[in-house]
Amino acid sequence: ELQLNQVVSCGVCNQTTMRPIPRRLTAVLVAATIASASALLTAQAKSLFTFHSNAWLNLHHYVRSVARGGPGPSGLTAEEQKQWAAGVEFYKPYAARDVLRDDGMVAIASALRAGEGKSNLEGIAIEPALKSMLERLMPIYRTHGWTEHDRANREWIAGVVPLVDRHGPAMSQALLRTYGATWPAEPMHVDLSVVAGPVGGFSVNNHITISSSDQSYRGY
Image (cartoon, helix red, strand yellow):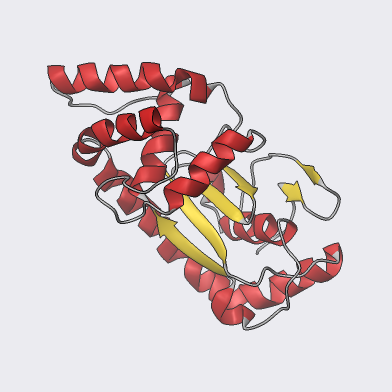
């Protein structure tokens, strides 16, 4: 049985909190609804969300997590280990920043969305040093992590899409009535990531990020 029992942010009351949510459909619907903007409810059944597995955004969150003490990739060569360690050291200042309330961190995640499917970060509006570091780390990540992370992301998406198709329109309309809100004009952008902040998920500016590896987001 699906239950809407926790709220991660509230655009109506202009407050934001970050709490783990045990149901992955609930996580997506609640985060999206309360981050809502003024727009008409149109074609909800077809346009509630778009789901993404973006290598650059995953790498960004992954290295940041390692810099915070999380586990890193295994099987690296000596040279790869040296480069990865340099990347982790570089990311330590980013690890100390808030992915939800720090405007600079929000801007980085927003910019990296445009890198989905690209082989490099040309044209992506982030700091040159950060761009250079991510491009140096990406070959290591693609060899030692991304394939597994991408598979987990896509498995999560494949599991939740039928639930959104079946329950999304009714649940979203009920939430909108409760909060006196309206759905954004464009589908909500949902990024799956191997890690996603300290509680496994957050939403800001109509952009939702959810961890595909956090077991509390896998029940339905």
